[in-house]
Amino acid sequence: MSAVIKNSTLLFLKDLQKNNNREWFNENKDRYTAANTNVADFVETLIEEIGEFDEEILKTDAKK
Image 1 (cartoon, rainbow, N blue to C red):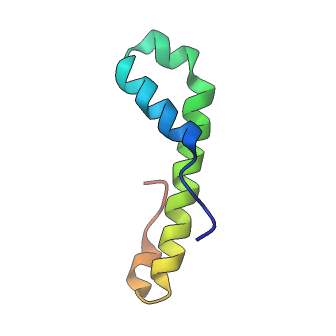
Image 2 (cartoon, helix red, strand yellow; image 1 turned 120 degrees about the horizontal axis):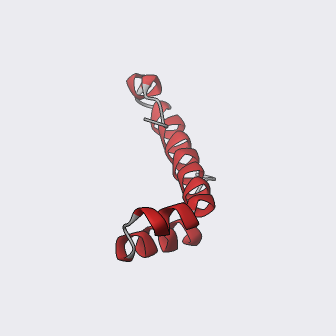
Image 3 (cartoon, rainbow, N blue to C red; image 1 turned 180 degrees about the vertical axis):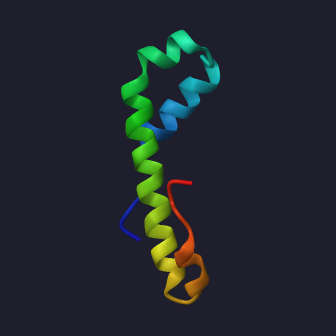
């Protein structure tokens, strides 16, 4: 598996947990976008890998 959940994504989630408010989120929108892309890429890779033995999962949209 080539995609991984980056440390920056985990740090964003940890910071979000401590600062779950609109002001903080708006100030950190770029971090959210990067983390969201990272997770979607990871899930897409996971779907492809599982799809090698379970074709049904290939119907799954990673972004959902």
